[in-house]
Amino acid sequence: MAAQLLLGQQLAAARQSRQCQAARRVAAQAEAANRDLWYPGSQPPKHLDGSLPGDYGFDPLQLSADEQARRWFQQAELIHARICMTSAAGIILPGLLTKAGILNLPEWYDAGKVWAERNPQVPYSALLIVELALCGFVEFKRWMDFVNPGSQGDGSFLGITDGLKGQSNGYPGGIFDPLGFSKGSEERLNEYKTKEIKNGRLAILANLGFAFQFAATGKGPITNLFDHIADPVNNTFATNGVSIPFVMPLGS
Image (cartoon, rainbow, N blue to C red; front, side, top):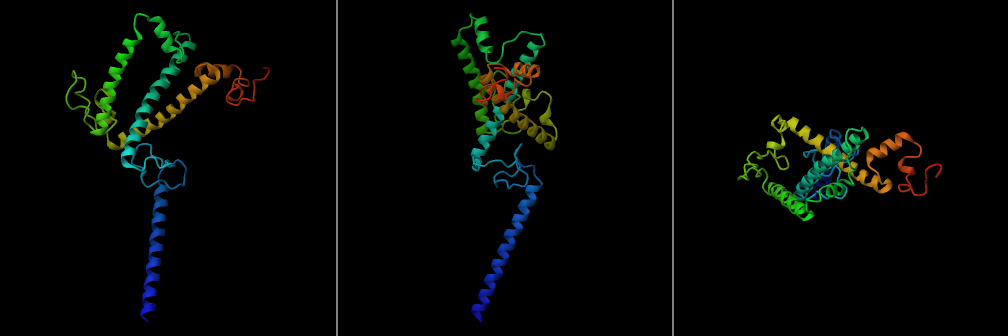
């Protein structure tokens, strides 16, 4: 009798455990259904709970499972996104202005060489030292802000850093927020953060595409675009002789 009672209790406990697991699965699926995910209906990793800007549950290699690594990857992605957005504009706009006949600017892959040839009075060594000093100062401040979030405004450097007391790591505010976007509601600020990282990710891929375009055609993206418009059959990624090596332009 005691054995039957014990067995019944064990079976009841097992059923309750299965029910709890099923309830947790249903809750997790419901939570995932309410989130924008990189693959709709997929189960995001536990460490990606949607609290980070642009978090769509994509981490197949579990690179950000560690909290400290996740913080670092977030800041690394953010700074690279901003650099790539700036560089994408710096690649596209000169090409457009040159094509429009407004200015005559070199392509991005020749810009440094052309500037050096036009300014021989500026030694490369001096340019390198100044660049290292300025970039080193900025990177040091950024690193210190990562170690101690919000500390960029501590102390003073010629009055430049007085207004850099940011709200969170990676968002210094001050002179870097002239329109005051970070001073609105938290919901609106998170919306801006998400838009920034999404556009930044597109810019990262765009810069990669610009590099591949130059490797394949020896031209900039605007020139490639106008070539395609002029001859859409022969000027595509499939006919440049590199992307798909065995396909050549018609008439070649």
